[in-house]
Amino acid sequence: MLPHVVAYNSAAALAAMERVENALSQPDAVAGLFALNRTLGNPLSLSKLGMPYEGIARAVEQVMKDQYSNPRPLEAAALHSMLARAWSGEAPHAE
Image (cartoon, rainbow, N blue to C red; front, side, top):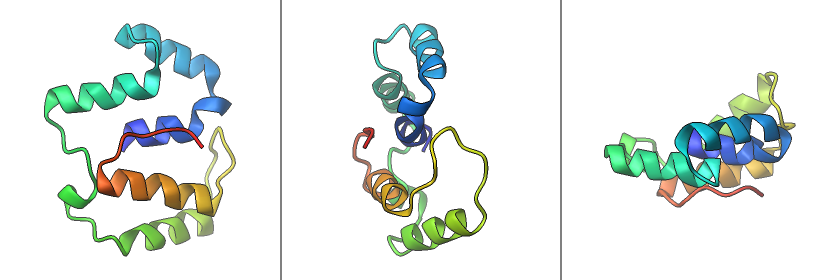
């Protein structure tokens, strides 16, 4: 999940992205974190962790209901897209 969350927040947290890029010796924090997960053999999808597809809408609803401080404003449609990518194991990307 971390690479997807980083992608979601990347434009609003440029200094943090630079620190991650430096730590990973990678030109892109999001791609670097996703590659690290793959290298470590971590599951790359929420579905492989047992989350049903219907859980995406439930998660978005809960996040929007109980909003928290976040570098980027929380947007239901963007969160749904992010979680759908994470659920299917697609590579993360910023919207």
